[in-house]
Length: 101
Image (tube, rainbow, N blue to C red; front, side):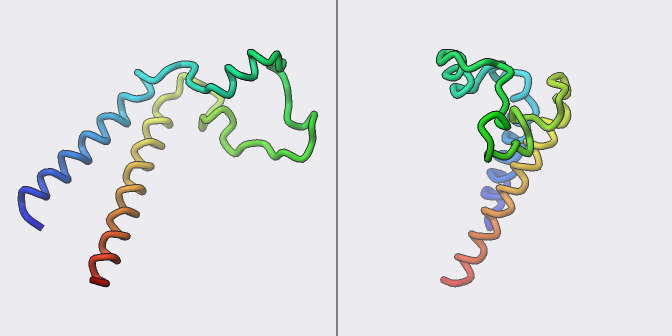
């Protein structure tokens, strides 16, 4: 790999981590179109999936790790880990494909 390519990859990873660190602060507070559609349809806010049966609860309800919405440190850690895992899997797939050619 060229030195120029290495700089490009490092810069891209740094940009990804910066975006991960800033995204909890700049993201929309109400991004879920499904919840908006449920409000428009008149589904009560305290509706529970147990009422209809057969649907399991989400592992991370409301797309959060903690019930405290002010805890953005966990969100940042999850985002950074997601970027690292995704880049690692992509690199592994690229290495496998390259070794077969």
